Length: 259
Image (cartoon, rainbow, N blue to C red; front, side, top):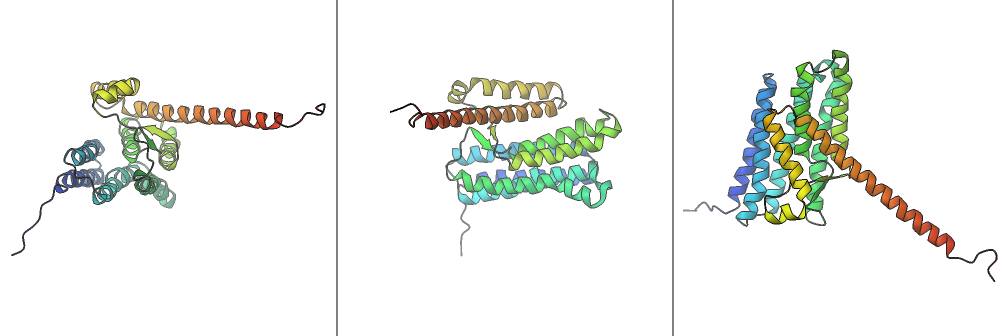
């Protein structure tokens, strides 16, 4: 009689599948117009998404299967669920253009996951993500829709332009090559190497708890702005270096009065 073999990899994979289950429940809540309830299941999915990697490292059970499974689950929980939320909250009344606008974060997020899987085995910088991570995109969309778009925060005339900007902007940031900070691990070494980043995430987490989620979208805007400003500074530095090299090359040849 054949015996069922249970390997160590089943433990982190179960955490990954719980991520998918949380995303599925979030979608059912959205279908029932319970956006706030859906947000909590999306947060639950993000917790399992963060834990599966830690559990895999702790049990020494990392595998290519786990990486691919994680991406498939993320595509549902952080790609399909927020896209469906955008559609139910506003875009359902815009016909085909609304379908396309609502789908953009799911399409961009899935592409970003595939790109990450290619990079992660090579030169991926663990301190940063290339492009905004798909869970961050989902949090941005959920926090905007729940605490601003459906909360009568601004005039009705602003709702369509605002949600269009959120949908397109989130999708573009995910497929961009802009570096965004990775969530620092809870270790002395991480705190010592990046104290400001660790303090920023910690203060943001406390602010979200105190505000019952209302500060989440403004904090995501700060996170996005910081990544954009860093990319701008790095680009300006590269431009300055290129200009200096060009000046050196131009000045290296003989001048008109050199003998």
